[in-house]
Image 1 (cartoon, rainbow, N blue to C red):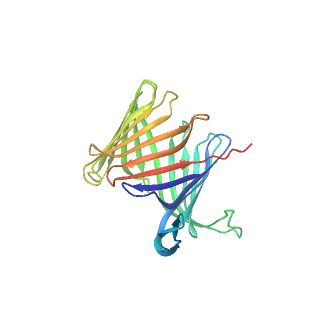
Image 2 (cartoon, helix red, strand yellow; image 1 turned 90 degrees about the vertical axis):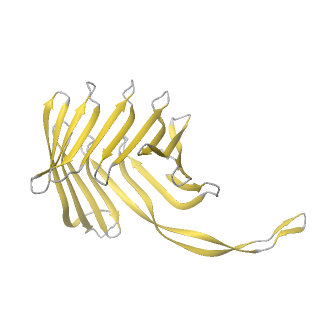
Image 3 (cartoon, one colour; image 1 turned 120 degrees about the vertical axis):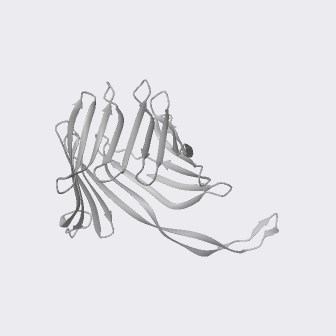
Length: 279
């Protein structure tokens, strides 16, 4: 269970009822998760009792206005093949489901991705039985080795036409160094570069894109002696926007809280983790 609260600078913590939950299989794969999204907010008056101290009235009774947050809950089920590849994700939002299906080639690269909208024909709504399926999009990916450390990825639409291509470069350890994407019939392009430390841990991920104007985003990572991530810093156009600190349970080395300093909105987001173990 994950609980999320916000604390604007100079104000008290605001609990908007945001939660997340995750279920895992015996291999550690996420099989089901849910999260809440903000729907609406309304205000109501609540009674505040009088405050007495040593028999003397300090504050008379009255009322105060509090905000009540109404959230929707989104449920997602994830399915795997025998190689632990994700082959399907189905997200429930109201009466409909958003589903994504994946196929892989012989070396574990995604060969096909399909996005569809579906209905549940089962009378038991806790079980899923495919009803009406509408295909929203379908993509196929073709890989061509250019050199031992360079790969071309061709992205084909549902008509089998290449609409986007990428050049992916690797180091001699198999780590991705860069991905350069370019749309065939437009001027849009994007480049993502990656840097690693001596232990092959990602330390720097930088994206430069002109898809929505010239944009540069960057994530910097720091780790503890056990290899667990301690800090993630996010920058946009070289300006620090977020600084995320992760605190761990010393016994199990599992994260128990995450504190995100939002420098743009002058607030702190606090995430608390809880665990339930099954045998």
